[in-house]
Amino acid sequence: MPFVEREERRAYTLEMLKKFYVNWESKFDPLSLPRNNNVDTLKLYEDQLQELKDKLTKKSKILRDWKYPENVEDLNQIKFMEDHLIASLNGLRNRKNQLAMEQQSKERYLEGTENLEI
Image (cartoon, rainbow, N blue to C red; front, side, top):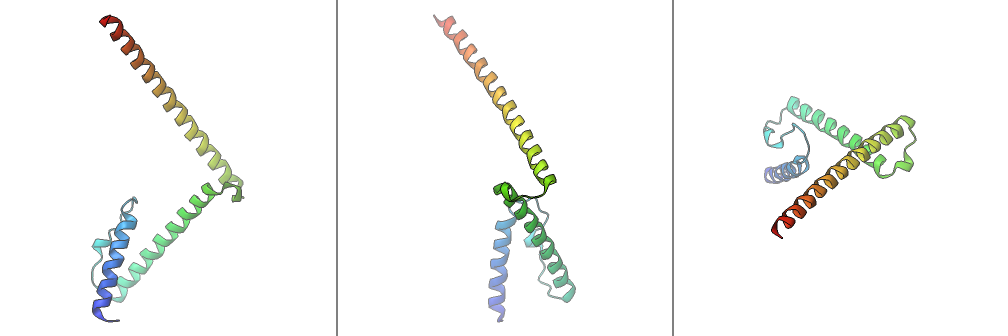
């Protein structure tokens, strides 16, 4: 492969990696990749790539389980998902109650200021 084409591919790959990892809590910095192409460095990158692919596979499975819970056949996984949903619902209820109380306080305050103006 010609040098220019390799460099174009490398630049494109770096751009894709930057876009892909911008929202992830990852320590991987594609800009830190050296231009050294020795065997040890390539092996290290292959290992890192495999590790990232494994993480992506795991996250994809988790997402798929949440998207299609009817396909989950592991009882422990279902219990974990149920507990997570219950905790999320409780958090939403608490937030809803907090907002309702804040809104009532504002309405009472506004009613009180209106009565002062009359």
